[in-house]
Picture (cartoon, rainbow, N blue to C red):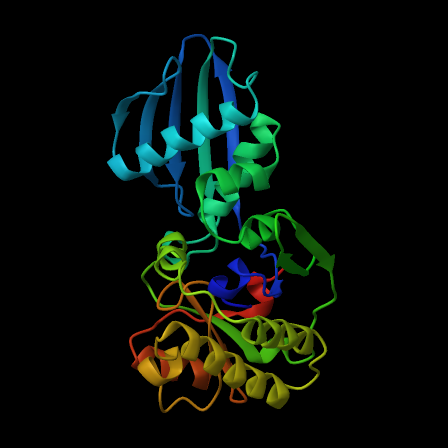
Length: 292
């Protein structure tokens, strides 16, 4: 629940795995190409590409940006394991999202972990070959329980923790309906390194979060954490920007401004849903429906 920006520089964050993810199915056929197809949570095809095995040239694609990323991904896998794809075969690779695409539940990090498993390489080596972020979402994609994640100087520290708040039934995820590229957000702040006191404060807040027992204490924590991140990155808090009259707390997740927001409410689910629907945000997902 900590911002990616500070985790990159060594702050500790709480990462919580979800019930939903992205499945990958690989079939071997005769030939010398990769046929890659992606399906959304409704089973509708949203991306397709054909990739030549010789140099990973794109034969066909429905999205140029996505196909270029796949080419980069396959090259990185082979650089980490020279035996990967060394036998001429045709590979039919199908990816199945288990959540709406616009929710932004770490689809790229899950893809990297799935590819690392297929290529028999470290998902972290693969991630850092491709991205400039912290890698905490890759760790979360492979976790079965909540973890504390810290990225040090070339060292990743993972610690399993218990986080099962008694007020979980008063927490909800609110999709904002548009994705924000976390990698681009991190790049924008790469040269704006926080001082050690800020990193320490962010990590202390994460440790404090694990032990919170009441909704009111959690809401106070959200305000404190949002103020910290907002001051550092120079962006307005999501509650101030979109829901200034909302009675509960609202916490930006990942890169600010898109994907999901975590909200709390002392009111009924019906009243909470009504508030956000009137703000043109029709989907409210109970915390316990999403968190494994």
